Image (cartoon, rainbow, N blue to C red):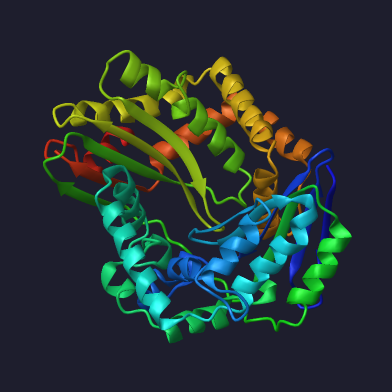
Length: 419
């Protein structure tokens, strides 16, 4: 692994990985400011700011930003999560300096033109409307809110319509001034990259910035909650979250292996028992998600209103059973799936750059892949069974949407797990 790491005097971190033989590179800046860094009146502003990044700077118009990258055959984009906002580009190796210059320009020199703000406001409101019309999107927002009620981490990333409708140029500038400091930025690049050249460019582009107050967001408290919305839809949507480890907790590796064995693929227990043997649904899966100080295992399924009760109770029964008889073969298969998924997923420079930024954000270093693989290898069947038992006792939250009037309550499901 050809990973190199450097920190500028103002706290701006640079991590690169040279991938021999590649003629392209992915490069981006990950800002440690996302949805959970917003105050209640700011809810949705991190995402709004991401949209505005491409709407013009002091040096380039919106069209010139697009043309600068696309004239060299590149691609530029951004995303917002609850703990991070990322701005990234894919270019040929010879155009890495250009890609970084454009990214620095949109980060440091936005003009927030009032006309463009109004145009993008309309786009975001359409995005919110689309999300509300997509049951298997909106249910996860409701589940997050039920898990962390009254907390920034529990709020939707897009924000509510009334907030988005009122954001001003000053609001955007204030959020940038509060959170977009060099000490909260990570420049990650992978592929055909030259570390020393990127460090020199970063020093020129970002070295003059003053650090911002490096305040941690309020700690997350997972709280048992339920959101149920009965509506005449074709499917009943079921989403359950069980409190799990943060990504700094050693048991996150066990959580990921358990979630894979339990509902991560066609050979998993949930898929085999509930879809294949009983035909109760088309889609069912589980996954382990994590943040800096909390996490959860999520189970999702879509079924008919007539089958929602059976699906929910059988899912709880399978969870209890996993604590008693999860087999060596199931755990070995899940370990292999996790290792293969990790390694195959890192065959692109974009995935490599994403991993570099995430590891630096978590550990302020990049663990060798062999170290990560070894952590998965060290998870035993006993560990997985113990984790399943822990999930049966864990705080939980439930979201239901559609013809769900026959669905059991969260209290019903918790009692079934504890019986």
